[in-house]
Length: 320
Figure 1: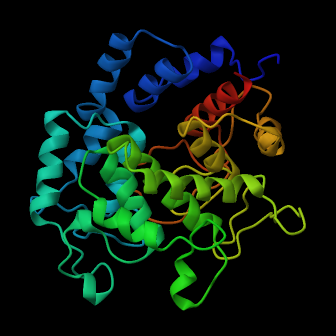
Figure 2: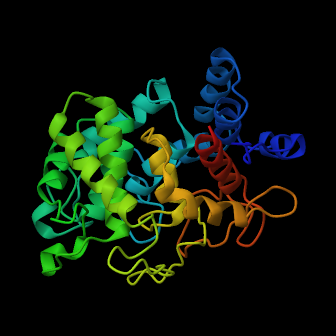
């Protein structure tokens, strides 16, 4: 196959003219730079730019925005999720200090159902979407999230996925919930790679997406254009995605899981390719409403370094 991912030098330079959190990932994932150079750039995430700004917002009580979770994107959970995507080094002194404060002081008091008020942050609450995001970031940072993972494992539905509405009687899985859980199981496996039950559950959930070609109904093959719950269009790429699914996020998961591409994702890849502009960049199609702790985007409808990076490495994985 002739690679269709290869970015121009001008696009690479545009990506590099950014925050350390983007630069180190471009160097590693698109440029195949030497590991020591990548590590040197990655180390800057804790001391410069967005990563340093996010760390500085943590309170002495270990919380961000004074709470474990909120609807505004600036809570403890949301900031840790952002720091995970920025690639903050889990072993750095600043990271370890922040994690210690969370372990020692942060609970779910006032952030979730009353029965979870006394739960330590890394124990999570009860909603799979939230628990998935908590476990994804927390496992990446080396925290014990086995309680969350055990709960998520027990909540898998018969069709292979997950749904936050299962407690209300839903028996069909949700793409939104499923992608949050899959990302969590994958990060947990990286931390505890010998858990065969977790791996089996993740592979079943992965098949849930693949059987639906990442954006179609299994029963009819009909394209699913919009999510029923959030109303977001799956061909509109956002970053951060938070709990919402879209085609690019689904492909990113498959890449991160080192899945060998097959014909079931070909149409999803074509969607990604079709959204590249004449300059070889991808736009920030949508930015979800809410208070961002630190602004990491150029603006909705404008070329997005995050989406361009994400799309290019997905295309590189597929073309390889």
